[in-house]
Amino acid sequence: MTMRFVGSGIRLGLALLALTLTGQETWAQARTQVTLYTSIETDQLAVFKQAIEKELPDIEVRWVRDSTGVITARVLAERENPRADMIFGLAATSLLLFAATDLLEPYKPKNIEEIKPAFRDSAALHRWTGMDAYVAAICFNRDEARRVGAPAPSRWRELLHPTLRQRIVMPHPASSGTGFLLVAGWIQMMGEEAAWAFMEQLHDHVAIYTHSGSAPCVQSARGERVVGLSFDMRGAREKSMGAPIDVIVPEDGAGWEMEAFALVRDRPVPQADAARRIADWATSRRANELYAQFYAVVAHRDVVNRPANYPPHAEERMLRNDFSWMAQNRERILSEWSRRFDNRMPAPR
Image (cartoon, rainbow, N blue to C red; front, side, top):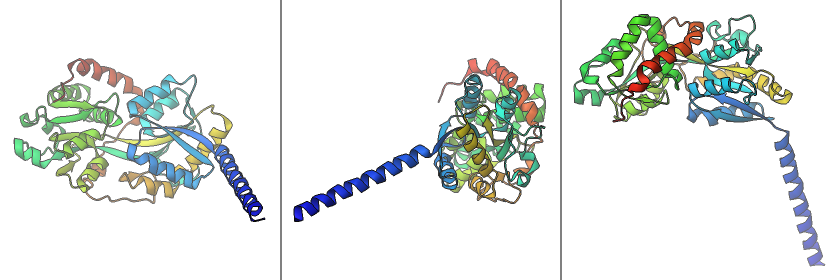
């Protein structure tokens, strides 16, 4: 009698377990997987995935992450057979390029009126929306500079000081959005001829070009280089972690970019609908408060951020960027940069 009761209990438990597992499997299958192409920093991926899936529990985020240049080239290469459902966190100049080639679905997200005008697509058909902005900055290691007698630069041309020769690291503009905004900023600020002359001299001071926009600041923070050309928030973060660096936005102005999102056109209905809902979330105040954990300047008009160790005067020194010009001239600028410098790459030291 007891054995029959125990056996029945085991069978009942197994049946309940099977039902539970079946229910979990059915729920998992019911979630819509959305593929998001991105160039946001790797350490932010889990944070954004968790936030999106908490807000939209029937959606599963699948990241495809690489540097700005690689993601831009991939989207263009896949234009006949898109693999991405959404672009989330890529340079606005890349999205302008995609819009010009009709790769993006027109969509105006909810809460768009709460987004600052500079972060909205100004075209008749709204195809992209800004999230946050990042500003070119110099990460300057005080300890290493003292050791070699290098003065702190306050203007871009002061990077040409003889003590900084082979002691600067910079992101490669073809792979890094930060690298491209540096080059595009110098051209807009100095004019074409003067900017290329400056870069010719700067090239002799660069020890290595990196794939990533954050890597130069990390190398400077570790004392591997005196100067890392990077962006504002990476510098503030490294300094807050105790690195002996000054984060300098030069007084003669600095290029900047914004990260933005957009929908890829002609996607299957479940993914397209899910991507629109992610876009609606991405313009919300909650989403912008999340961006503000990583960036000082965000798109929402009511979200103000004052990060620790953020470089003074950064916003007032941001150039009057012409994003359309940057997008239209991107390939020309990168081709010219590669023609001048790719065959003269410094050997890593």
